[in-house]
Image (tube, rainbow, N blue to C red; front, top):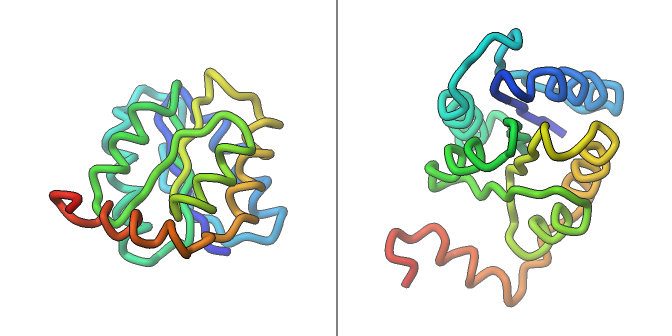
Length: 146
């Protein structure tokens, strides 16, 4: 699977570890930065990740910042992205099954490496259920929701 990953400085170490792990798992990984733990602004990297996913250059995206909140808001500014902030595997799976999320966000200060891997595994292995959820997903793509 083609996976794009991006973070801010607070999540740089987690991003680097996850990118290496994903490559070891056989995925094609686009690390969109940053390249160090020097202070950066999470919106810049959230927008970059969202643009990458929206353009079809990745099948899924992983967004990371200190809490996961800020970068998830940035990613969700792109109407082609559905980013879910998760902290455990069930939410990660449901974000795919019910919401057809194409990006997940994790807070590096809130989840450790093992929990992040468990969330990502659930996210990547779960398919969208379709059916009754399709109509709701279609509404997410409309400016008024109606």
